[in-house]
Image (tube, rainbow, N blue to C red):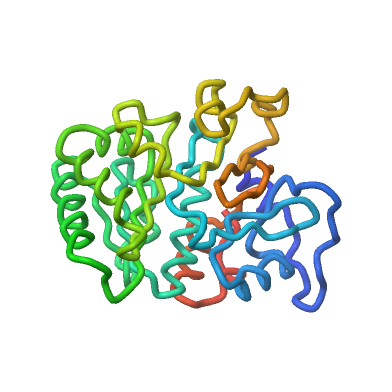
Length: 268
């Protein structure tokens, strides 16, 4: 069953009623559930999703650059959508590289720069790399790279050189890179790949799991928990954990980014 179908069948919750507590992981974590919405609103950092018992999983500065690895239908686009909306709402500048036009909902939003043409990717990355070399800027910035095709394009030639600079020096200049792809980007140099200190894995291959964790994949690594179920692996000292990523429709993401009520937007 699609996430949109699940959302459309949910009855609107009364604003003064908390959703029922869960002991394990939710199968879907929509922003429109009052308890989850209040948590996202009040969080000090963007919420990636929710763990066991609705414990919010935050993307803190210590998590560094982020790689999301998962095939089509496993929730990488949904995860990026939730993060983009939260960053924009917080006043963070977002550069979104999106050759597949997955994020048309973000057109003309304040703080958003969208790059959708292959010829513009290398130029845009080179300009960002030059800014990073110049030192810290006045505002935080997040570079979002959507889809396997975009990831492949930025991992070759001049674009890869600029991306390597951003991964190596971006954090000290206030720039974070978040990239979604199907698997580990082979064309990117090993030292650059290792700069992705946080990895979100959705139904990963054995090779991807070994790269991300340094160990052999357990039987649960490729279990299908449904769209949006991912394994979070980071170098913050926390053990790998499953997380259900935050779900927003495109209309809800646009509303949230603009500071309006996403609960009044369509559930599809």
